[in-house]
Amino acid sequence: MNKINVGIIGVGRMGRIHLDNLVLKFPEVNVVAISDVLESSKSLAEQYNVPNFYTDYRDLISNPDVEAVVICSPTDRHAENILAAVTAGKQVFCEKPMDLSLETVQELEDIIEASGVKFMLGFNRRFDPNFKKIKSLINEGKVGEPHIVKITSRDPAPPPVSYIKSSGGMFVDMTIHDFDMARFMAGSEVKQVFAVGKNLVDPEIGKAGDIDTAVITLTFENGCIATIDNSRQAVYGYDQRVEVFGSAGMAGTTNNTPDNHYYYDKNGQSGPLPLNFFMDRYIDSYYNEMREFIDCLNKNEKPNVGAKDGMVSLAIGIAANISMKENRVVALEEITEKNVSVSS
Image (cartoon, rainbow, N blue to C red; front, side, top):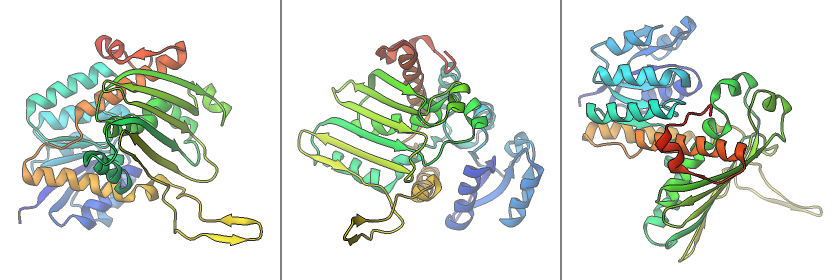
């Protein structure tokens, strides 16, 4: 069996997840190089028996043995990493978002399309077994035509304020997953966006120019309506639920818990709280999305999640930000036609 030689750019939290999966769970893959700006990350190359370590990602891309690149660098490096890898003819998997500028993302989409390389964006929640089951029920006609999509996405604790200052804001670093999931479930494109956001968790987040609590309504071209509620802090755990109501029925998911026990006594019923960390909640989805990428390379097929999905979800995030600030419904074409950026 011919193995695929993979290089990983950035071995922080997400990079380590993919490194561990690729080395331990993908016998058809050789991880031949990793790069990270921190020299201390060289220990990971030694730990996983990766033969090449670089502090400059360009050295990894120029390595002729590297056939595919997994990009897990900070968001503000994604665009240059993608451009360098695609220009060098490497196949690319990249964590979201591609960039915080819609114009840059659109330019990258054109370059990727013209290059012919395989490109996949890391919207891992599409590959979560629970959400995939809901989508399969929709595809089988069990739900009928989707009328209402309800998504709850609440983190157990907010990220550091230092991260928030450079993340692009909650709609781009957090809700962007929910925008993609709403499109995925509705099977249609967004026409209009209305968002309300507040600071109800941590005033320091507000001082950093962001919000921590929001409700967003999306209207789709097929008439479906989606509501998304977000919070940076759910004291009971990582709250991730989806429900789709349609003309023929309803399908939904509950939270993942450490076990499924329940307990009764004279005071009432109790049971386990949801999992408390996204890496525990979505451990299967991270493997499944990488399985999709590697299988596409082996079969010479185009991944189902690509640059366009990143562009559309970013545009929705920008529209939500404008809607919140101006207290109005924003048509998505306002954003896509003017190449409005996150900072607007």
